[in-house]
Amino acid sequence: MEMRIHYFSIKLGDYKFFLILLSHMLITFVDGRGVDQFMKKRELPMHEGTVKTIESEDGDVIDCVDIRKQPAFNHPLLKNHTVQIKPHAQSRGIDEAENNPNMLFQSWHKNGECPEGTVPLLRRTQNFNHSRRSYPAFLHKKVAQLNDVNNPSNHEYAQVSAVDGNYYGARATINVWNPLTNFGELSIAQIWVLAGDGNELNSLEAGWTVIKLQPMKHAYRLHIYSTDGYQSTGCYNLDCPGFVQTNKNIALGGSIEPVSKYGGEQRDISIFNNNDGNWWLQVQDQLVGYWPSSIFTHLAGTSDAISWGGEIVNNQPNGHHTSTQMGSGHFPNEAYGKASFFTKLGYFDEGNNVKDPENLEPFVTRPPCYDLRTGKDNKFGVFFYFGGPGYSANCQ
Image 1 (cartoon, helix red, strand yellow):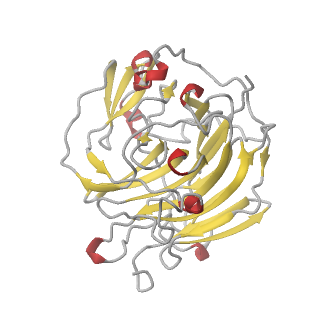
Image 2 (cartoon, one colour):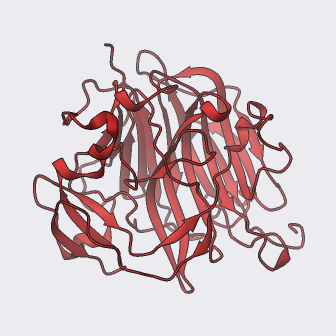
C-alpha cells in the first residue's frame, strides 16, 4: 500500500512544535467540545499500567504508563496491533524542527521524566462535562439538513477553508495567546482536516485550547480532537482508545508555555500534517504517535476539506454575548504583535509537496465580536489575522 504522511507542526516562537498526521483519519468517540458545567475537583485513579507518577507545579498529574498498556489497545480493532515506531516516508517542503530542548515546554518536566518504554498520560484531576460539539462552520453548506445555518449552536468561528479538493495534509504556523475565558467556556486556535458529510463526517483537529479551570486560573493546553460526526461522539487527546503514543516526553492535553505578549514577543506553533498510511503526530522534532489506518473510514486516504482558524464557546452569560476572547482578544486590524495570526498556510499534494491554498473561503460567525483579515506576502506566505474581544457595545 502506498504511504503518505500528513503533518501538523506548531512553532512557539523559540518553541517549535510539530504535528504529523499520517494517511488515514481517525474516528474516535466522546461527547462534544464545549464545557457547560464545571464539576467539583476530584482525584481520579491512576492509569492502568502506571510505573511512575509526576506531579507538575501547575497541578497536572502525569502517569508514565507502559507503552503496551496505553488506552489505544482498548480499541476493538487494535487488540493485536503492532506498534509502528516511525513513519515510512518523509514529506517534502517542511522545515525541519530545530533540536532545541527549550522550544516547547511542559512544566511537568521540572519534576521528572518518564522512563524508556513508557508514555506520559495526563490524569484527569479536573472533572467537567462537555456540551454537544457543533459542526465546523464552513461545513454548514454540506450539512444544512442537520443544522440551522444561521444559528451554529453556541460555537462561534473566525476561519478560512479549502474545500472540495484532495488534500494529503495541511500546515500552518499559529500564534499562541492567553485569551480571557469565562468559567465554563473555552477558546481555541487550530487546524481541522475533514472528509465526509453529515453523520458520516470524519474530523481530526490539532492546536491550542485555553479553558478556565478555576476562578483565577486559565490553562493553555496542547490538544488533539477527533470525531465521527459531532453528533454524540468524539475524543480529546487520549481520553478514548485509538491514538497510539510512542513518545515519552510530550503529554497530550498538558499545559504549554510561554505565550505571546501584546506589543511584545510573539510565540507561535507550527502545525504540519502529511500522509503515510497512518496519521502521525509530531511535536517539535519528536514524533508523538499515530492513529492506525485500520480505524479510519472517510479519511482513509485524503481529506476533502481543511479549515484554519479560531473557535469559542458562547454560553450567553448574564443574558448577552460572552466576553470570552478569541485569539489575542484584539481585532485583526491591529495586525502583528497585537492580533493573533495564522501564517504559512499550506496543503500537501499527492507527491507530498506543500502548496499554497487558493480560493480560500472565509467564514466569520459575528464580525462585530470576532473578525478575520487575510493576506499573502513573501515572509508569511498565505496568512490571516483573526479574533476579537467578544461582548462590547457592538457585540451584544
